[in-house]
View 1 (cartoon, rainbow, N blue to C red):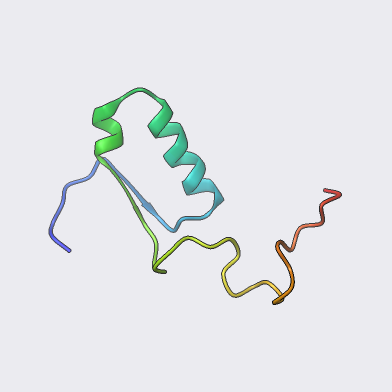
View 2: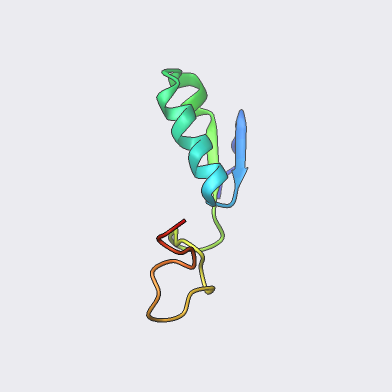
Amino acid sequence: MADREVGVLAIGAGPANLALAVAIEESGSAELADGTLLLEQGPDIKWQRDLLMPWARSQVSFLK
Protein backbone atom coordinates (compact mmCIF):
# COMPACT_ATOMS: atom_id res chain seq x y z
CA MET A 1 0.00 0.00 0.00
CA ALA A 2 1.34 3.41 -0.93
CA ASP A 3 1.53 6.36 1.45
CA ARG A 4 -1.62 8.44 1.35
CA GLU A 5 -2.76 11.51 3.24
CA VAL A 6 -6.36 11.22 4.41
CA GLY A 7 -8.81 13.55 6.13
CA VAL A 8 -10.81 10.78 7.83
CA LEU A 9 -9.41 7.35 8.71
CA ALA A 10 -11.94 4.74 9.82
CA ILE A 11 -10.50 1.49 11.16
CA GLY A 12 -12.85 -1.48 10.98
CA ALA A 13 -15.96 -1.78 8.83
CA GLY A 14 -18.39 -2.15 11.71
CA PRO A 15 -21.82 -0.55 11.99
CA ALA A 16 -20.53 2.82 13.25
CA ASN A 17 -17.87 3.26 10.55
CA LEU A 18 -20.20 2.08 7.80
CA ALA A 19 -22.76 4.65 8.98
CA LEU A 20 -20.00 7.28 9.01
CA ALA A 21 -19.01 6.34 5.46
CA VAL A 22 -22.61 6.66 4.27
CA ALA A 23 -22.98 10.05 6.01
CA ILE A 24 -19.78 11.32 4.40
CA GLU A 25 -20.84 10.07 0.96
CA GLU A 26 -24.27 11.70 1.32
CA SER A 27 -22.83 14.97 2.65
CA GLY A 28 -22.30 16.20 -0.89
CA SER A 29 -18.65 17.04 -0.24
CA ALA A 30 -16.62 15.26 -2.92
CA GLU A 31 -13.40 16.50 -1.29
CA LEU A 32 -14.33 14.95 2.07
CA ALA A 33 -15.44 11.69 0.43
CA ASP A 34 -12.22 11.45 -1.58
CA GLY A 35 -10.17 12.11 1.56
CA THR A 36 -11.81 9.29 3.55
CA LEU A 37 -10.28 5.84 3.95
CA LEU A 38 -12.00 2.88 5.62
CA LEU A 39 -9.67 0.00 6.56
CA GLU A 40 -10.83 -3.56 7.22
CA GLN A 41 -8.51 -6.41 8.16
CA GLY A 42 -10.56 -9.02 6.30
CA PRO A 43 -10.71 -9.36 2.52
CA ASP A 44 -14.41 -8.52 2.59
CA ILE A 45 -17.00 -7.04 4.92
CA LYS A 46 -18.99 -9.57 6.93
CA TRP A 47 -21.44 -8.87 9.72
CA GLN A 48 -20.30 -10.39 13.03
CA ARG A 49 -17.39 -12.29 11.47
CA ASP A 50 -16.70 -15.64 13.20
CA LEU A 51 -19.38 -15.01 15.83
CA LEU A 52 -22.41 -16.61 14.20
CA MET A 53 -23.54 -20.20 14.41
CA PRO A 54 -23.28 -21.79 10.94
CA TRP A 55 -27.08 -21.72 10.44
CA ALA A 56 -27.68 -18.21 11.85
CA ARG A 57 -28.02 -14.99 9.85
CA SER A 58 -27.77 -12.68 12.88
CA GLN A 59 -27.34 -12.98 16.62
CA VAL A 60 -29.97 -10.32 17.25
CA SER A 61 -33.53 -11.55 17.56
CA PHE A 62 -35.84 -10.36 14.77
CA LEU A 63 -38.22 -9.24 17.55
CA LYS A 64 -35.80 -6.52 18.63
